[in-house]
Structures are given as C-alpha cells and as structure tokens.
Image (cartoon, rainbow over all chains, first blue to last red; front, top):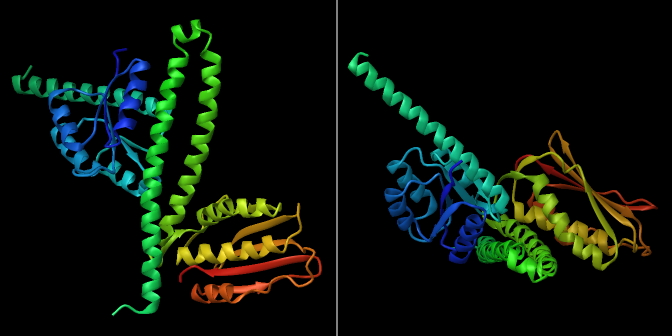
Length: 143
Length: 218
C-alpha cells in the first residue's frame, strides 16, 4: 500500500510540527501548515489522503476552512480536531462533510487509525466516481 | 440598567470565560508536550540510541513525563468542563456528567480530610434543564458539609436516581465524632430555592444524610 499523504492544519505550530514528524517516523508523508489559508493553497496543488484540521484557529477558522476545501475537492477526507468543549462543533463539521472528528488531546495511534480509514474511504470514493465517469462516457458513445 | 442579580451572573460568566479560555490554552500546551515527548519516545527506539544503551532509561523517563502530562491533561479537562458551566444561566444538560465531574473535583477535599467519596447511579445520562453553575455549587456545598462531618476513613456516598419529577441526589455518610453536625446552612437553602429543589435532611442516629430533589425543568 502506498504511503498515506496527510496535511495537518493547526495554529499550534509546535503541536502540528511534532505530530507531522511522528507521522513521518511511522512512514506517512505528513506535512504541517498553521492556518486555513495555507491549507487551502496546499489542497489546490497537492492530493492528500487525509487532512487533519483543528477547528479553533484565528483568522479563517476550521469550519470555514473545511467548507472551502470541500468546495474545491468534495472527496477530500477531513479529520476534525476539537476541544472537549466544542464537540458539538465537531458534529456540525461532520454534517458539513468532514470524515470524522477527534477530541483533543489526541493519541497518535487513534489519529493514525483515522487516517488509514480516511485513505480507504477516499480511494473507494475515487473508484466509484471513476466508474460513474466511465459509465457516462460509455452511455454517450452508446457502446 | 443592570441589577445586582444580573451583575452576579455576569461575574460568573466572566470568571468562567477566562478560565475556559486559559484551560483551552493549557490543554494545547499539554497536547504539544505529549507530542514532543512522543517524538523522544520514537527516538529512544532508534538504532543509535539502543546501541548506546540509553533506550531503556530514556523510555522510563519519557514514561514518567507522560504520566504527569496525562494527569495534567485530565485536570485541565475537568477544570475546562467546570468553567463552561457558567456559559448560560439556564440550559439543557446532563446531570450525570455534572455529578461525575463535581465528585471527582471534590476527591481532593475528601482526601485532605482522609475520608472516601464514592458516587453511584452515574452510568446513565440524566437530562434536565437547570442553572448548572448553581447546581454544581449546591452539590459541592452538600459534599463539603458531609466531608466536614465524616470521620477519617469513613465513606461518603453520593447517589443519583431518576425521579418522575426530575432527579434525586442523596449524599450519605456515617455520623462523625461531632454531636452537632453543621446544619443545612443558608447557602444550601438559598441555592436549593433558586433551583426549585427540595432538600430533605435524612440524618438519623448513625448516619448523616441529605436528599436533593431537582426538577426536570427550572
């Protein structure tokens, strides 16, 4: 299986950096950005298996970042990080299209599991879309 | 014009907001420390560190730091939950979760008096609409009263049970050495009144006890 490619988005720079380094140690291609704007730029140019996104960020917050990212790539698998007091926001984010939410403080193993699930789900979605596209072309060409 | 009651409410909200904000930041600090410690733990298992014979010692030190950060994280989580009680004057919520938090936060007070504090009936959520800060204060005051009047090594039992009209919280303990335990004081009585709660002093010769009946809706 190919390495999962993960983008971590959190304004807590030390947290995001340490998390991405630990994921790299475990064989993932992980990188960190520290605000929503940079995250949006990254997903425009790079394909990620999962985005780990903090909800509480200054400027463009996690919820708005999520909405913009999903408007660019609706199959993007986003794992939301929420504080204990903002679990309801996590649920709201899942309703908006996030793959899952995880409460902070998060154990690396938990997050690795979620990333793996997100990668599988993303791959399945891509395959479905590809098949739908092929079916559509076949219909148009009347094959 | 802000009246005295509203000003008190705003003071509670102010304290709660600042505490919630700081605990959120502290939680981030502890979360970052946990991840950095995790990095050291990863390093401890690399070949050069193992070859230098430092791996075991490093893992042991990391484990000790991890235990303390987890302890800190749990305390901060509980303080954060407590701080959010003042978010709104009256709102829907889970009484079980509140009691679980308050009894855990009260363990230290019980420990200082060398008495035990147990809670039962907290395995199912119990939804009510109330003033959560005042409810927490009322339960805490009742626990404090029990702690003050219970003998060393004895156990205070808090029990929650649902009731047709809402919820019943009972707090009981063996009677301590004092013949005249603290009466149900004005603070408890006033808090109960504010919450529409009924208090019953259930003390007898052997045991101290208080029962609080809280309504479904304040």
